[in-house]
Image 1 (cartoon, one colour):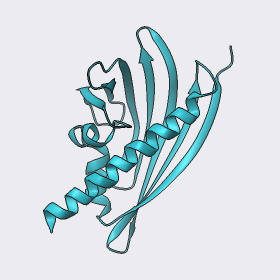
Image 2 (image 1 turned 90 degrees about the horizontal axis):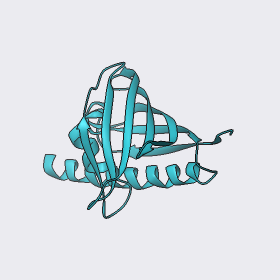
Image 3 (image 1 turned 120 degrees about the horizontal axis):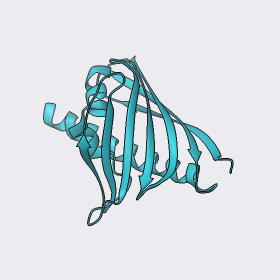
Length: 155
């Protein structure tokens, strides 16, 4: 069976430095705050190893039963400008999809620009790339709120 594939890019602007944005994007505790894609869902960090070659494990899904396992492997960490990693989504013993994600951060005035490029290979059907896109949109909306909170606490 051939996988269904898709790709997309998202762009955001933030009023914080690339260093501060990098921390929000890569620190496991911060990712747990913004990574869940929608209200009522959670991202629970089970294992964190933020280094090139490091593997991380998360659980995500409904707060009462986060049934999806996410295995992340880091391939590039050039703080605070570039990160590349894969995320493999598993439920039970079945691998549902794998994605390659690239973060690009650049200084922009007193703030930062963030580019997120995602390429998805789905093993369960053609709807997965659109679902990943929706999940990333939801996660970045949470990141927007977290950045706003960071600015409020610093100001």
